[in-house]
Image (cartoon, rainbow, N blue to C red):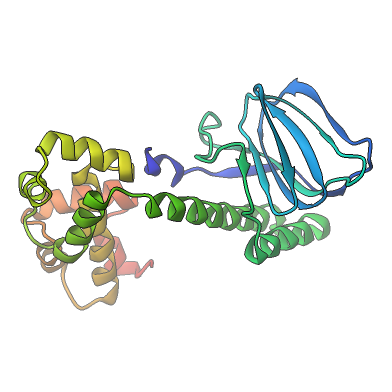
Length: 262
């Protein structure tokens, strides 16, 4: 999974509503042109998303990616009560969230707090309401990502976990994939494949991300030059360091020193 594809997505809420549905509530069968999230507060509903049928109940979250054919209905004995969000990505609407259609028992007080605040902004429409609404929704999505990727991390291959721990401790050293492979008795090519499957990154990309994040913290502290920071974070070539930094962060390392942007 390519985690980086999610970091620069910019969501725009098309429709937001808290709905206490009547016993005859349905979503007619049709193909959607946007992404949908349903946060189930009470009751339950039956969904059919691209032929996958399931029941969602209190505490669950339903995600329907853009372009899906879906339909739904509630149960008359326990009508569903939801927050519903329809949205699209402003920069690339073809990207889907990494979740399945049904996230069981993922609702929590943090998610409910974000939804309640979005509802207030959506209703009152203060100055810069769209900006604040989008910011809150991005925080909510970030929370969902953390829940999802923490679950993924808990299932990580123990050999890759050993490599990750080593990288975090020795990122400033000269790390070669052959040495890492030798640590866990794997061929370097297979390690690269297994690492990508477990983390969404190549070994080099993951190592550079750790180094650049540390470099940004050191630069922001204002005690070291760009060259000194590059050396402390495992880069022997200042020009390569600057290139990787800008590609990762979107701005040059000198900007961090000048503007203290983090």
